[in-house]
Image 1: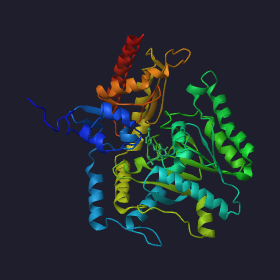
Image 2: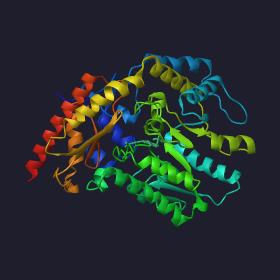
Image 3: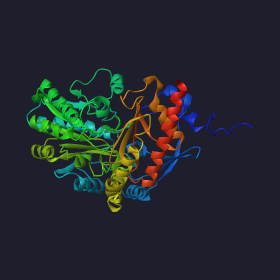
Image 4: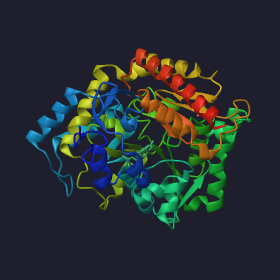
Length: 461
Ligand code: PXG
């Protein structure tokens, strides 16, 4: 019997059609042509379903964004209603429409005190491009145009547009960009397990923060415009800085009169058990980048919440801010964000993260610490990491060639769990509506897959 032409693996299968025509983001197309993509067909709650009907617990909330989970009629209905009413209009040249105004107002109501003004974009990358221009505009208006340099961190992720990729600190992205924009500088990250596990965490946190001070002195404070950082680095491997880190960064930014940008694309909208991560970590930034969770990923939206310092200068001194996107404040997208925020409030989602599920995830991950492959587990809110090591005592890693993290990730997928690998750090960031029972399922599957990974490593020796 011949196979169905559209059956998995056949010439007309999703996989074959995909590899012929679809250029994927962050994908090796040689490998894709060989192995074929995993095709996800539908989703419900915290689970996605592949083309074979396998149910997979989405431990990454899509890409850190599907905070309310899949299948929410309220978000779909909000988009539909708005698209009937006004599917598109722009906010350029002194026009506006109710959904964008209402959303800007709503964000001001949940943001830290003094954040009254929001600029909308279509993504986190565009929001960070906006930040670069905002910072520049601010210092120009303040009569200090030489304050142009921005300091960021190695292994930071701030997006994929040219400017956002330069702003980020991902080596492989920089390599493909060629010559770098020369006003962005990177200092080392506060990655205790990876860079300072033999040191006291508080002392390590202070030392990493003071790298900022050294860099400012090297560049001259009169030339430095801003420092940007994710409160907790996400794509870099859920790097949770020691408690001593952010207060010291804050102190240094104030001392040298440097703007602080908190990139909350992942940590915003509830992931750390507060609306914004800076509220949880006690950071007082000047600009906040958001995206992802603002719409639970149902439609693309990003933006910058502008603090009083920058907002007042733009309002008082004026002059056109020569920047904007066709889809800045898209009405349907804003309507979904409003429905998303309303549902988070109505359903007490953030309180449940703080009081119930974040502690459950922390306990669950900690229970894996006795596994022979595990060097450390850590989490904050609903984002966590498991460090796979060859030797839990010394923290020595496996040979990179073994790609142990990717192996473990594949075992997870095959056994019904999406967990991501950043090198050999396994990371999770489930939907904020995950239940304690589903956290148990996540942790139990992770343990089983660590076992399978251990068996596989043994088979290679
Ligand atoms: N800032 C941060 C902190 C992010 O995590 C962006 C900016 C860019 O947002 P957009 O919407 O332009 O993608 C992000 C995005 C990963 C992964 O591999 C993470 C992101 C995107 C894609 C993959 O963990 N974060």
